[in-house]
Image 1 (cartoon, rainbow, N blue to C red):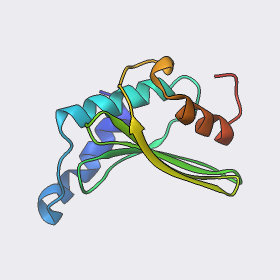
Image 2 (spheres, helix red, strand yellow; image 1 turned 45 degrees about the vertical axis):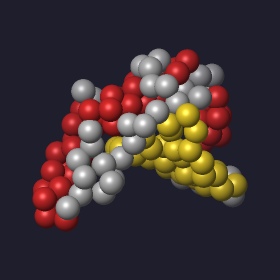
Image 3 (cartoon, helix red, strand yellow; image 1 turned 135 degrees about the horizontal axis):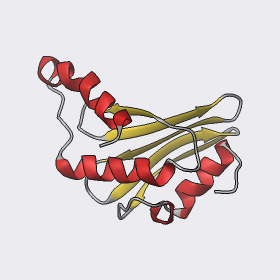
Length: 120
């Protein structure tokens, strides 16, 4: 498991009982790890957070260009919210988790490229 994902799980541990948050299930963790793997080579490391409903979110912010949040819930879909260059995006789409860049949907790849132009 990614150290980023481990740190997010450790950070949320006290909130699970204290606030009644839902812990991420095995399917969520598999999808989150696959998403981390798919983005690791070409883009900066994201901030990883566990959300109250048990979803896991990966968040990137690029000063002056905007921000992007990709989240998984263990249901075979990838959700995104973003503001990039003044344009707003929000949607959830079907996604099959696999740990390589080819598994990243074209739209997600394009959003990341808009934050950080590169050759990925």
